[in-house]
Length: 264
View 1 (cartoon, rainbow, N blue to C red):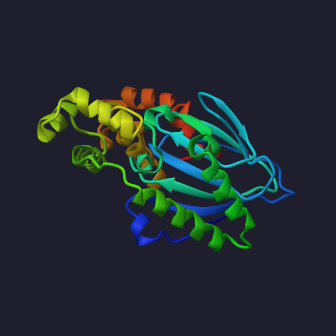
View 2 (cartoon, rainbow, N blue to C red; view 1 turned 180 degrees about the vertical axis):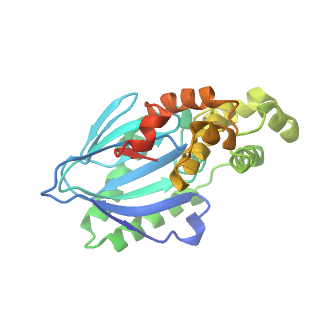
């Protein structure tokens, strides 16, 4: 698999985490891997006619076209096929809602065809990208399209953005009622905003953020013990970390350390 990263234009940097091209060698066998939850939404624009991928999560998705993958609090098993190519874009956590005119809870933990979300607009975009002769031009077209969708406007919420920032800053280790008091809105209203704009509740987002922090510790330096990781990430004890690992990764922490098919 060939992966090339591209620069994100300044106007999209608050909303887009990464943008790249992915190309599979036509003679290579299908690539299978498990992708762990990271509260991010990914957009894949195919520019080849072959079946792009099979994604198995809470639903099974097969598509030759473009797709949106909303992987919030569950892992997904992905198989990409030989001879395929796409432009892949990962939105910042909590930012995808600016580009899709529906509650993000409707997309949570699902893979959805882009045609179902953008209709004719998706088909026109895919045709434009397919007609390009190089990936730099494809990336340019996609970013300009997203910029136009952004300019259509989506009402921002300072309370939501503040809470998102606080949970990320503290890596999930805070009480949601404290956020409710600081923003002067009820926990019910806060939960409604998170489900609408992110796809999960603030409490669940905090759990995932803590788990992601634990994964970052493991990736930087293999730990001497899992208890170290648990305490460093703010878990009450090792048992709570093991529970989250089995739920979010589908395997135990020890298996996670040695698995070569995991992307996190």
